[in-house]
Image (cartoon, rainbow, N blue to C red; front, top):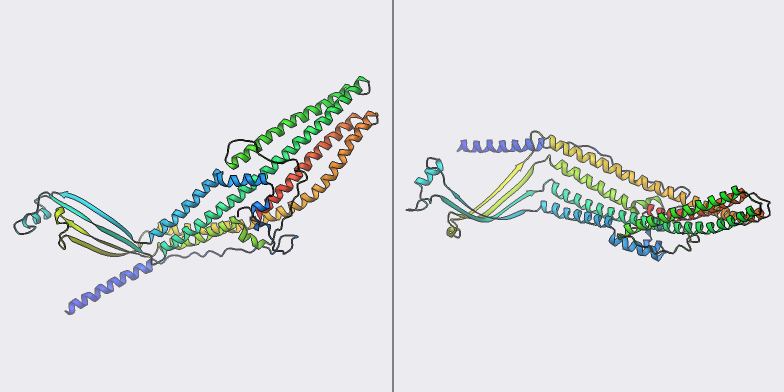
Length: 482
């Protein structure tokens, strides 16, 4: 009796010792990763601390042109890239279900049939030869076996490895949603920018056509003066060259219009067709002022910042998952069913009844290099996500700062361009009158016409740049997706 108790104590000590070694050896290394830096300046340069922010405005309220609104509405439904992104969001959502299922018990049903013939001069054969199933009934030869039942397995999530994996999948799903929102912002911005570009090209084409009429009238005048010996053939050729040049520019702009229309059609997800727009009032279009708010609002309004934040949080959980691989895993397995060598005996219970229950604990002991490498990779990826998050915040702040400066400088530039266009428009008529009265050279008329055309083209480009700067500032502040 004493020897039996002593034997039991030795076994307990051995088991405890083995478990202690497993737990001690399973201790995971720790790598410290610093906290992310979320600090941003209190205000933009030369800006007030007013928290009014245009980014909170719906894009349908920000864009007043009904034709542009219709294009964006259609693109949000039909754009292929956006629909591809929506499928990515759905994939991430399915990953949550997969991760959730990993920490729940797995239950399966099985059924089987087999036939076996063992050698007579083997242990199994000898047993079957001398052991009857029941009195007077030998083992059948060959021996058949039929079974049906349920099996279950469950890994106890003691270290929260599986639950953290599920939480990480949720965060990745939220990150893909923010990625979708960011794509919507980019799509809205690209369509609006292309739409304003198209309107600017329409106006440039109109300016060139108007200028061609003026040049052709001037060419007729020079030809008449040459016939009257008041101008030379050189003057005629120079005026003709300018007409040819602008006719060539007209075809270039027409090609740009076709390409810009087709870019919009591609973004909308349809085959080439005419883009409905109203370009007649482009040069007088009002450029609305935008309230930038304060930099801290970028953390809430910029979808790319929120996406990077979710990805950073997911990377932290992935480190915990990788660290849990160093710890012992505890599993349970169970089964219950019926088994007999003939189907008719399957319902004979308890003779055909079988069941089992197994518990095990497994910990990595030797050659843990793969686990260590996975853990180091997880921490490196966390650092990458951290730097990506901080870079996204910095980039957002710089984008807003650049666009605020751009909006201000374009406003001042446009005012000066208006004065330049007015002065050169008056100088065209003046140069023609002076040329008719032989008080100005033909070169002065040509130079004045060229400068007037260039100034009109430039003011249209400046108006376009103003509208684009407003759109880009709206995007940089985080608007356009909600």
